[in-house]
Image 1 (cartoon, rainbow, N blue to C red):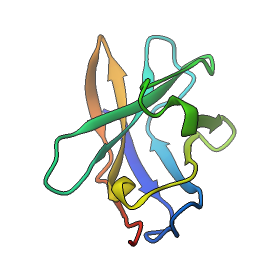
Image 2 (spheres, rainbow, N blue to C red; image 1 turned 180 degrees about the horizontal axis):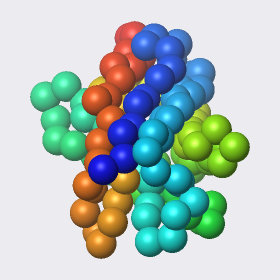
Image 3 (cartoon, rainbow, N blue to C red; image 1 turned 30 degrees about the vertical axis):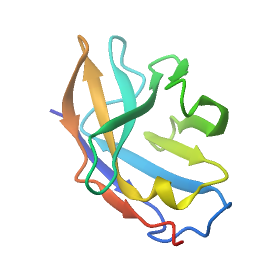
Length: 118
């Protein structure tokens, strides 16, 4: 399996943009048949899927977050990024990147905590 690692600031001011990076090791983000997702786990709530970017750079976002979400990539660095704009405190969560194959997430990063203070 590919190894994934999330990184980014742990504290984001309300109304600002949340930006995270996911670096993949041992597998290319351009490999056909795979999708690269961002998900999050708010405290006390369930896991929420944010969106994905495919091997050709195609993207798809959760309808509830689409207006605020941009997922992009840097193929030279084998990285994907998440930008979530205008964040409210409710965006506080552990954010994960994961690889999808055959509709299953088969590889996960360890997650990174992002706090949006009230």
